[in-house]
Length: 328
Image (tube, rainbow, N blue to C red; front, side, top):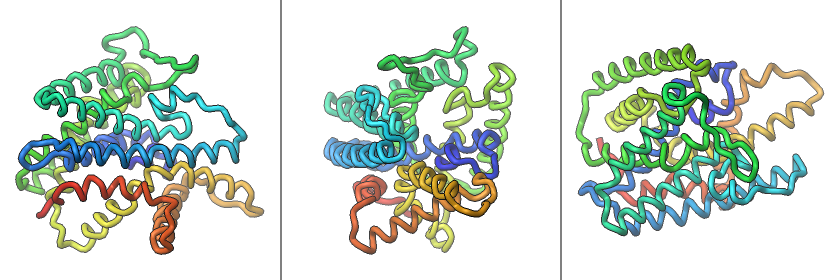
C-alpha cells in the first residue's frame, strides 16, 4: 500500500488514498508491537540496537539516492539541515525513516528518565496536532500551515513528522501488544468494512469542505481502521499456505520494497522512454513490475552473498528477532 501512494496502479491513486492511508500507521504499529515486552517494558538495549541499524540503513539509502541524483540529474548540492531533520530531499518517502529514528530517540530518552507513563499522553497530543495541522486545518485555521527550511517550502512537514505520526502509531503498537488477546476474525472483518466505508466518507467530507481529500495523512478514522487491520493480521491462522507466503514476503522483502521502489521506478521510466517500440501507459503495469523486480534483486543479492540491500533487510528482521513472534 505504501508503494501505491507513490506509484499509481491503473490511475487510481486518488481513489485508493483512503485505503493507502493506513499503510504508514501499520508499519509503525508493527515496530511498536515488537518494541515492547509482553510484561510492558521497553528495554533500552532493544531501542539502542534498533536505532543503530536504522541509522545505518538511512545513511546507506540516502547515499544510494544521492548517487542516483548526481548520475541522472547532475545535481550535487544537498540541503543538509533538511536532509537530517526531515529526510525527504533525496527521496520523498524517506521522511518515514527520519521520523521513525527521531521517535525512537525520544522514546529512548523517556525510558532513560523512567517517564514511560508519559508516552500515551504524548501520543495523544501528537495525534491531535496532526489533525489540527493536517486533515482538519480548515476547521481551526484560515489557511494550511507551512514550514520553510533553508528558504524552501516543505510540504506536510508540520503534520508529517516523528511527533505527529511516528510516535502515536508506535505507542498504539505497544498498546496492542499489551492488550493482546484472541479476537473474532468475523467481527474484525465486519469492523474493517464499516471503518473503511467511514474512511471514504470522511475523505469526501474533507474534499467538500476544503477542496482536498488528501489534506493530511491521518483522519479521524485512519488509526482505528489501521488498528483493526493489524488485529486481523494477528488473528489470521498461520497454517494457511497463502498466509505463510504473505508473511514470508513481508518479512523478507517489504523493507526493500519501501526503500527502493522509487529508485526502481525511476530506472524503469528511463528504460521505457528509450525503447524503440511502444508500451502501454506505465500506470497499467509499473507498480507490480516494480515490486517483482525488487523481490528478484533481493533474492539475487542474498543468494550471491552480496550486500547491496543487506542493511535494509536487517530492518525488518531487527524488531522481529528482538521479540517473540505472535503465535496463533
